[in-house]
Image 1 (cartoon, each protein chain N blue to C red):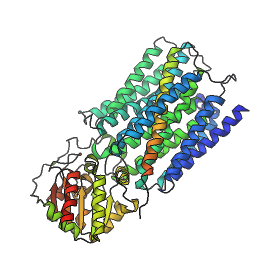
Image 2 (cartoon, rainbow over the protein chains, first blue to last red; image 1 turned 120 degrees about the horizontal axis):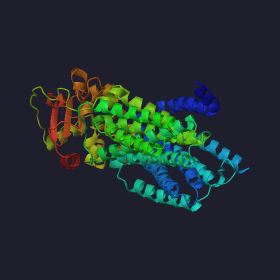
Image 3 (cartoon, chains in turn green, blue; image 1 turned 45 degrees about the vertical axis):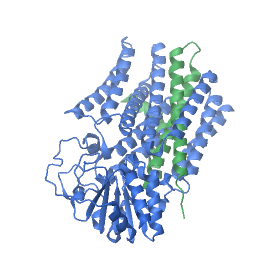
Amino acid sequence: MEIVLNWIHANEQMIYILVLVIFLGFVVIARVPAVLHTPLMSHANAISGVVIMGAIIVMGRAANNNYVALILGFMAVVLGTINVVGGFVVTDRMLEMFKKKK
Amino acid sequence: MGESILSIIYIIGAVTFIMGLKMMSNPASARRGNIVAGIGMLAAILGTIFLFRNSDGSPLKNHIWIFGGIATGTVIGVLAAKRIKMTAMPEMVSLFNGLGGASATLISVVEFTHLAELGFPPDQATPGILAILFSGVILGNITFSGSLIAWGKLSGKVKDFSFKGQHIINIILLLTSIGLSVYIGANLYSGDTMLLFYGLFFLTIVYGVFFVMPIGGADMPVVISLLNSLSGLSAACGGFLYDNKVVFTGGILVGAAGTILTVLMCKAMNRSLTNVLIGSFGGGSTAVGSKQQGSYKEITLNDSAVVMSFANKVMIVPGYGLAVAQAQHTCHELQKMLEAKGVEVKYAIHPVAGRMPGHMNVLLAEADVSYDKLIEMEQANEEFPSVDVVLILGANDVVNPAAKTDPSSPIYGMPILDVGLSKNVIVNKRSMKPGYAGIENDLFFQPKTSMLFGDAKKVLQDLISEIKNL
């Protein structure tokens, strides 16, 4: 019990962010029209690639001779980049087509 | 100084993510929103590489490796995203999503291995940190293997697969994974820690496969949306681990957005999430197609052309069949042709038509169909009584009246497009075989309905030349 309480105290800021962002996410998404659901999902998917920053930190901290960390970190950076770049480009391609015709 | 600048970049990054999502709610601003978030992401990534400082104040090293990885990923990502056909979009998004999950898992693996090498110092291997690492592995791996299976299913490489008691095994797998995490955390110094950790890795991969394997048909959009939400949460684990607030915010934002989208999808089908996840759509456990069907009538191309040309209002109901046949451009041509003859043409879009939320909208947008021609279910159902001809192109379950009338049907309760309210219904299908969900459709046997068999693209092309010859 004490561990949990200490943990909550130590991570107060993160917990605030967690709660507020959950509400924010709900409010922002709830009004998206069905027309945009696919691009929205693809866009959100690209944003979830933010994890690439974690991968960069892993790589940047690894010692020069720690090949396990270097190789796994490298893979994480490559995969994360594909997720981010591919996600944004695909979304852009889709949205490019959503033009109003007269 | 550098670190304060990084903080500012991160705050701006988080704001661009929120603004980007906000702008995605309107077709007019959506594209800018995507670019805004992209720029925020780029700034945050560059800021991390050059301005991030470890707790001892040292900068990040291995820049060559980092840029090598980013360059490789960018080339692959851009090529894949540019070359993919619009009809294959759902599987592409699913694949990207899985890679993000894998990235999150790898971070947790490296950090856990690092802790193991240090001998789990109690000040670093705290229960909180361990819980985050294990969550990262569990969520990341489920996202990874689940998305790969979803990708395989959508591209037709993997078939639906389920066996009796699979849900029980799934629950056991998940509980074992969580239990194993707790056990590893409680017995860090026992010597087998790394071995058990690999066991956890393996278990969660298997769980991801089993989790998505039995789900199919109209439920695919829900699963993809759910996996998207999980990938956000696994990213948030990485953010928590490094106390990196922009990663955390981005991850949670996607997690929340994915969850609400999943709920919207479920609502559109009038089913609960649990029902989708363990319902095994079309699994054969329900009485499917057991009752005797009447006879259906066919219509010739010429007759269809005449009926549609002299109608006042035609409503097109697109489905997955349209995507498979890649008939979206031909469909738009037919629309223009009918409009030239003074016919009002609209498209009725069911929220779960296709294999991804909004799949049909993207497809028709690719063919330059103006999005104000596409109307949503509620409005379409109001308009059907004034529609002369409904043309159904490769849609099946979303127009199945059994959803309203037959309580034993697996899709009972799902809101449908009430095409029966219109004066005539023309159904284009390749054959009389039931749709993806394996459910018979009474609509085909109703007196108002006529069948027009053939590949959607071929049929539409023929229809166009028939209308020209009228």
